[in-house]
Length: 140
Image (cartoon, rainbow, N blue to C red; front, side, top):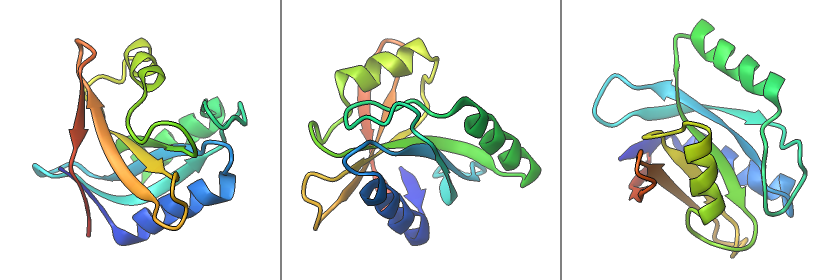
């Protein structure tokens, strides 16, 4: 289970809507001290490919977000991006990129905007064999 504060959940959806039709992306921070990590902070990162079907985080903003998390004594608990069209699941491209970039057993949060009036927040994990598992998301 992945716990996300309501404030961060609202901001995830706002960020996805603001960047639509392009995908948005970023990192999610919080405390990993218990069985169910709690995400309490969001760091929006520029999608440098400006695409409705792909994202690539700005490398310097990505580094800055990691450094900021260390200064704040927070953990980077997940990365996120949006699907403004297409699958309401972790795509094959998402799975392949997770494996290529070594993001194994690390949560990916997905903001789905197929129905803009009812956006959805999902989370997935990819294991070292490439199997994708959906993670329960709880807004707190």
